[in-house]
Length: 220
Length: 220
Image 1: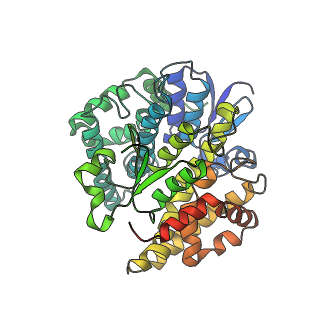
Image 2: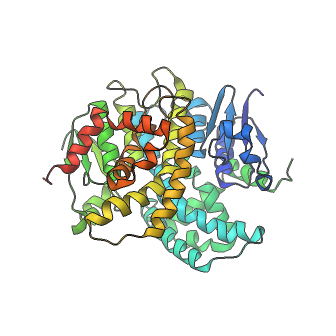
Image 3: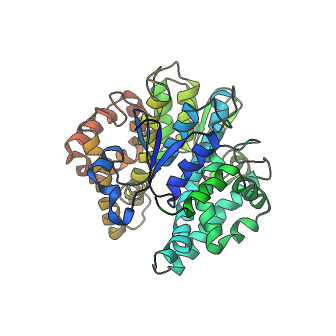
């Protein structure tokens, strides 16, 4: 099929990351929902484009990709002439892109692990009828709190993580932060002045609101 | 100070990643060793360029950066005219870069966690007189084995992870893989035919050999 396709359920945080990026850049796409409970992400055809059997996978004409942050970088590079410059201001060169990359890596290496565990226990597990793990919640809340303390200092110096413009580094935080807020731990963000301002601004972006709407749409 | 500086001990896997990239690109640099046991990575001056208090930090003229994979991408972008094209072949555009990015993200998201834990217990802990954790070793060996199974299939199709050319995706695996091999678990790589061929080839690169030599140099 021609054009852009994203494979995976819109409730997956990694799928959401890609959808938010596509909406920001104004790139039309086709979402191919997968039923993970039926193991559709482990089928031989799917494993050809996602060898780890995870979501999302992505196709754009003859390009197949996996890993949400790699897909987002590709979307920003390929569709550089559309929407905001999410990988550093136009003409800023390697140094401007690197400012985004270092905070995108902070998301990937420091924020992602504790926020994924928290999002799982407070937002996903209840939907799936799975038990809570209070010790894991406490441990990861503590770990995430230390990361958000660093963010709060950073966001006291600049409007967004990589500088004065919204970037892929901010966007990449939206999915996990959304589920932590939706799962009742919003005070982790609200209690830190600069993080609170930042979260309010980035979560109000139209592209993110469209992503959240897709989560509540009935499966196709 | 003018030119490129890397801050951190050369035994750190994240520092090694950056050193290997600089050697590949033929970029001169100054290594500023830090004594982590004295908390030099938590000093107010260091926290100005690495707000999480981790290593490495990096400076190139007026650009300060943290996070090893972000630093490596910057080196490849800034010094694109030197050494091999580690972020996709010249003229290959966003699709060629994305092939590297997806396997660099596989390293970051799938390979890094279990290989870091293993490297810690079998290579670092003995040097530091710390106790082993056989259960953690077994759990992460199992997890890493599943990742290497995917790599073995991939490396049956192409010489390197992202295609026929060595790239930042391969390079990024060197530090953890080195310490796992040096720590006595080399059979994880040797027992998988294509992974074995790949590891033998990438670990023999002159840039990596120079990095390993720096590890055994006496601290400045």
